[in-house]
Length: 89
Image 1 (cartoon, one colour):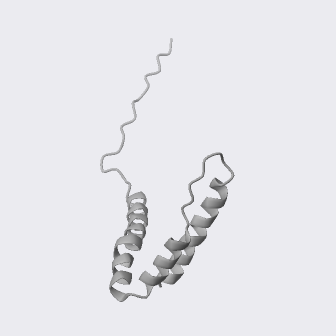
Image 2 (cartoon, one colour; image 1 turned 90 degrees about the horizontal axis):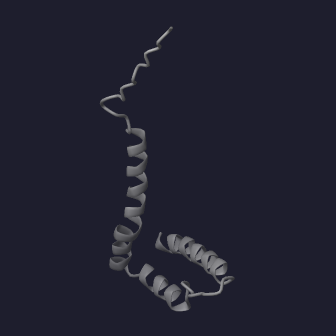
Image 3 (cartoon, helix red, strand yellow; image 1 turned 90 degrees about the vertical axis):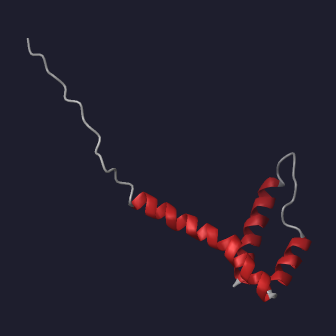
């Protein structure tokens, strides 16, 4: 599972590096050491679980809570509309 999510992260980082490399100042984010470390960590069960809990779960929960917030974003007290008084002369 982590290899799949890491692959998605690698592709995003690669695309960001390609875009950033066209500018004047460029600091690469994706490096060989990062890829090797991610592959090693994905095969160690304790670290794999740790990363799943603390790296990916918050991102999913934030999306769920944002959706719930948008869905339940109904005010308890509706906004009062001021009535205009038309003065007919």
